[in-house]
Image: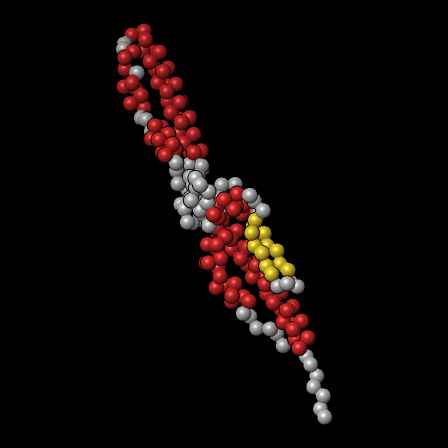
Length: 181
């Protein structure tokens, strides 16, 4: 009678080790994809920034017309000083507007949240358990949950579920790589 040799335990260990590595690779690739998507800045000037920019576009001629009530003679020198002061104020306002252009408005609902500080992006992490064949990608930043699901005053910006929908086919492709013999 021929004896059968069972290789199931060895093969199962090899397959489990392979999927543990592939799961770690897939989770790392997904983490990197999320960090890339969260790195996009959403640049849309706020209404306040637009109003200040429009206010800063006052021409020198308009300033002179505004100071026209000073008239001729002795007070004309004071009028010129007023125009210079107003010109400096206008220039300061323009530089303030240029700084305001770096301020970002909120991103549109349903899309990735715009990056302001990069804190969420830096704290997207992965965790892989090769024994249980489980991978987790997420963040420990408290407002990550509020961005994902929204609040009573803010519509959701689903960065995690949107990323999973977009990157899902690549995760499946990574996990479907054949086991080496």
